[in-house]
Length: 228
Image (cartoon, rainbow, N blue to C red; front, side, top):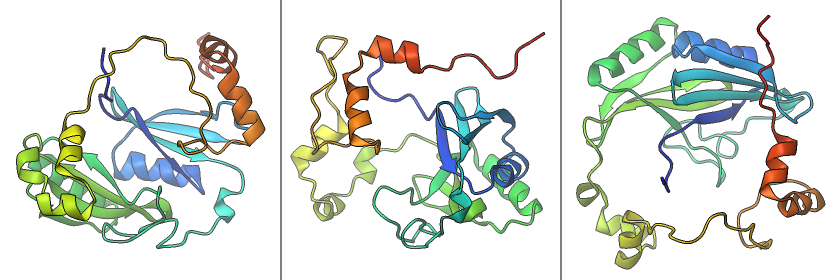
């Protein structure tokens, strides 16, 4: 059984105006719209999916009054690949293409819609182009001609800067497989671990619900449009 992600199923971004994002990622980026529905379990929410391939999608969420929240470079957004933003925020997003020719084709497509693009730039491990998306997103398209070689690209001097020992680096390069039983019971709540930002009382109740009961009661499996 796989014990690591096989790729990205979908990337979800918040939108002040979901139509603006759908237009950009369909027309400028060439990703067809494949789903748009009321967000499951979230009153007033809209949820869109655009196809990158049969296994990966780009997702957009619009929630009430999001357009009233200020964008602040250096805090909510980085603004460029060299910019800062708050910990936990997405510094930039890089889409992938297969070849250098595809990279240039994406640059030409994006520029044809009046959007400025910088690149290609050769980083050795990949070649990239850079541009902006709606709501000041920092975007990239990149291509790698071969898998990244850790022997060439894990710099010992940078490990020191990151506070990573050689022993840690060896563990990080070869994560140990989980060989224990399945299913694993929900761990006891530990405030030192990462947690989603639900109201505390409601969150603890969710954690106490058996997995099969939660799956049965919280799922929304039917599409919004039914065939006649």
